[in-house]
Image (tube, rainbow over all chains, first blue to last red; front, side, top):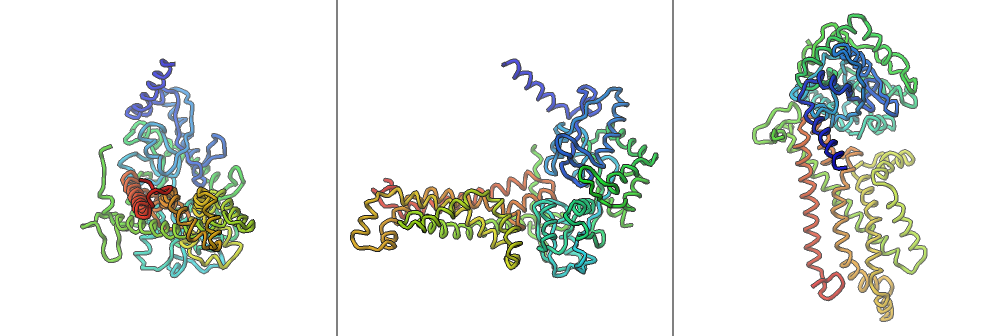
Amino acid sequence: MFKKSILVLVAALAVGVAYAQDTLKKVKDSGTITMGVRESSGVLSYTLGGSKYVGYHVAICEKAIENIEKAIGKKLNVQFQPVTSQNRIPLMQNGTIDIECGSTTNNATRQKDVSFANTTFVEEVRMVVKPDSNIKSIADLKGKTVATTTGTTSVQTLRKNKRAESLEFKELFGKDHSDSFLLVESGRADAFVMDGSLLAGLIARSKNPKDFKIVGEVLSVEPIAIMTRKDDEGLLKIVNATIAELVKSGEIFKIYDKWFMQPTVPSGAVVNLPMSDALRNVLKHPNNLPAEEFAKKVAS
Amino acid sequence: MGNWDWQVFCKNTIDGEVMPRCFGSGGDITYLQWMLSAWGWTISVSLLALVVAVVVGSLMGILRTTPSKTLILIGNAWTELFRNIPLLVQIFLWYHVIPSLFLPLQKVPSFLLVVLALGFFTSARIAEQVKAGIESLSKGQRYAGLAIGLTLPQTYRFVLLPMAFRIVIPPLTSESMNIIKNSSVAFAVSISELTMFAMQAQEETSRGIEIYLAVSLLYFVSAFAVNRVALFIENRVQVPGMIGGGK
């Protein structure tokens, strides 16, 4: 019994220090790679129940893992580890996950702690309203009630826009995305400001998708990327090469089409979010600029 | 660890610039100011809910000890209804479900709804304690009161309640401290109190540890202040030689 506890302890310590090594060596030694995934991040990364995870980013990561297997000459056992916005960076730093394929915005603050592959998705923050409301842009929000979700960057975006345009509107904060959506559905809020892909997903899954529409100018653009450990050059190189390969062969457009334009598992709902020009552009000219610089580049 | 960044509280909430003197000007606020305002919301929700809870809870507790079967039934029903549904579910019932049945309730501010929801939830627990306090007194006290010609309300007012309330001060203190901690559910209905501040600010600044430490400290200070006030009251009103009167 005692010996067993020692073994467990040693194993735990080994995992604890593993993060200091380079990931390719780590996965080669252990024969296992752990993919950080999200329970429910639109169609970028979500669960089908049990331990099955799918989505646009998961599909790209699976391609990258095939290339990692080729590079180290060994078949890997792929494990999924669900992460949240709060724990994804610590879990990456302590070695629990090796590659994160969720919906993480690449920004300057996070780049101090982790690294990002080239941008594979561009999130455009917009708003959802009911079709009979006459809200068409942010200027129409004067005197209205606007919902957004606690713990997201959209709250900050909204605050900045409010300040810049000196608009007066009432803010409501949902505790999660479906809660914020419910605020619009029940008429407590006139609009819900959030990432476009999430809004499209919520509408697709709602009782009556025709009751909602996405309107208004793009309030902010954010590059979303696959996350790796800080300065893990070996792994980053393979992931970026995989992305470049997918773009060159045109396969990434097929993957995009599969998740964003076709019926998705399990409900058969169609997200119906055509690829934005910003995403098309960044796939053509790959970079991993953080959100702050990325936004400037898109604006110019 | 070791890489603390407490300057995060002096950052402006619009562009993240560190403000001199830690306070923004011209309508801009820093995270410190935001946190203080959030603390204000937490305290307001808690204190108002506590008033509701003590008033309603005492009333229901008293009803449950009266000789009338109807009044006992009302008191028991109230207590069981609010004690057996989780607090967060109750908040959602008040915020989403009931207003969709009675449309005018949609106009009621969520602050009021959360005060009532938290107050009623806690009132069930207080009712239970007040009832226990009254029942801990010997039956003779009630009979003595009635025998000297007091009416039932007078017996409660002058004989039973003065003793019963002294006995239940310690459990009431716990409830008052709980209400401060339970007020964190108010974030679910868009009250920008401390928990909502913590969730939002840690996302915006990526300094979760500093933010959560500061927020925990404020919760501790608030609950501890309530504890001290309750202790002061307990000492002031104690009757030497009686139950709960101590030394």
